Image 1 (cartoon, rainbow, N blue to C red):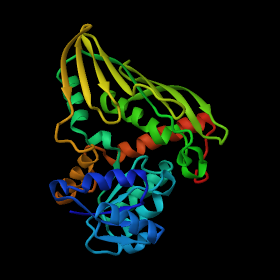
Image 2: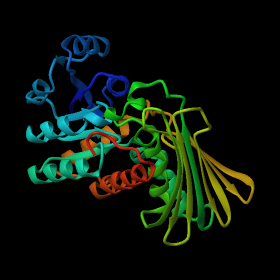
Image 3: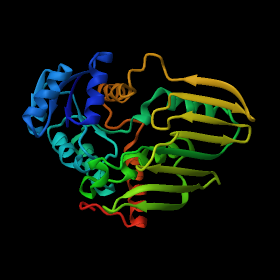
Image 4: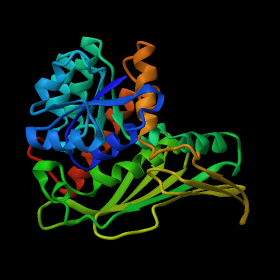
Length: 323
């Protein structure tokens, strides 16, 4: 499968590096940037066959089988709509769009055109994420009752985080992972949300705590931020023990405690490259099966999470120009 990358920044580099070995026949065939020189340099570094100085040029290439959109959150909508118009299947980096309105429009157009599209929230596709669900469903910790997830990085110097016009802030950059973590294991029946947020000088959220109450009485406490480093851990607590997840956005180790004693330890597959490959494998599977969405990240869930984040930003007074 030939993959064309739109964007040539940090996240695009992670995808290009994982595709360098052509896992499962998936290779980075083309890259497009708004700068021909940047595209040329990127292609030379990663041994990519085609380099384009415009998104339109890449999308017009009939050899491209899947488009990976790796631009900032603020710039997902336009290239995705262009790709759909060219009937190119899309893998759109998280967060899927600037807001729910854009997400709905992208998905509606893809469905109308019969084009596959999914969100590149890599956590949803990882083998370890599925292992956690298997452990919970199998009663490894009894009945799950509470969940905590924390994900913070010192990224308050990053342009994409500071600028509202780039959909900056911690929520769409890292908070989306803690929200996905909670929804993956506790479901979508959220009946109450409470939150606190520190808004920075540029008007975007820099650190937040979100508390979710679910219809069955379970609770989740989520922390995300751009001001500091932390342990990136998730804890899922049950009536007979708890799970400790190392790195909630890309689980590397899961420990099962029975009571307070460590009982089992699971590790990420030894053949995992960097984790980005699994979302590409799922796209390949879905495209070959003629699917328009992935059951690992359904369209309805992408929209629901965008709506959830829109509601949080409204409460905090954080607005983007495209809202």
